Image 1 (spheres, helix red, strand yellow):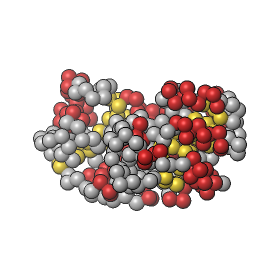
Image 2 (tube, rainbow, N blue to C red; image 1 turned 45 degrees about the vertical axis):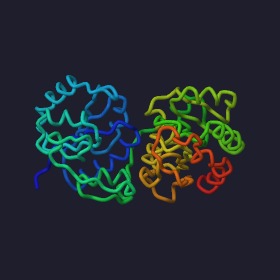
Image 3 (cartoon, helix red, strand yellow; image 1 turned 30 degrees about the vertical axis):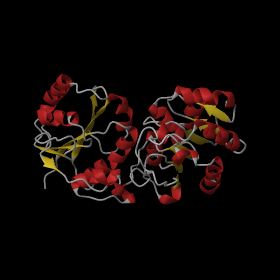
Image 4 (cartoon, rainbow, N blue to C red; image 1 turned 60 degrees about the vertical axis):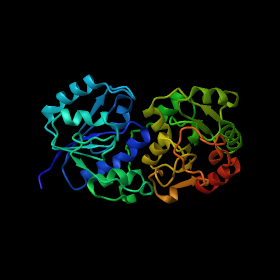
Length: 328
């Protein structure tokens, strides 16, 4: 069977992009397929770290906008690549426009938003409890096994990281943010209590983007609690995580990034599901904290019942016990 030239239309979230790298690994496995990836410009730095990619192509579309003229121009510009296949990893109508305009013969995905004609090889959806990574692999009739876990290689220079961010020694990383919404964020006051408790034994580095969370950590800042929220780019955060003893994180993009760097993870789940989007790392290196309430998982950005018990019921002492088990 001849090797193929393949285009991947990447998902728009950090965690989903990390999980989709398992599909890329499978497409590359024992084959010399040439694989390009079209990805939102804010995720270029991460896409460049995915093994097996020939070319990363930036998409400058705005989230939630059709950007039809831009998509047509981008599709036209890709015609000369003469791709054999395209895998569209999102469900939106607009995400399937570029492959059609690029005249890619096989456009493979799920029907999604009634994409008849745009998708010409329509795969049948699988059950959600089989997980998102299997949703991607089902496009090529494969199933997940942990030998296919995503592993990103990032060059880290300990001295360079320590000099730039003014800390040194062993540390653990907190990821208290989750871009998706409040129903995936363990309450900040609990993160503050946990930082105070753990700083008696560990150096704690806090990373993320949400400046409002950063403001709440400011009174705790010291040589043992170092607040880097809003002060790093994604690659710098990855380097900080790669050099750490382990990570405590909400179910977020940085949780999946941590797994791709093969770091020990304590993962906190609220409205989402550890069955659908688990950290793709060996079970010995992860501890999943999930209350599995009757209302869980709802997959909502905000708690529809107004109590967010799925996260509020997670106690600081539970996380401390998990740290003792996993990080020592």
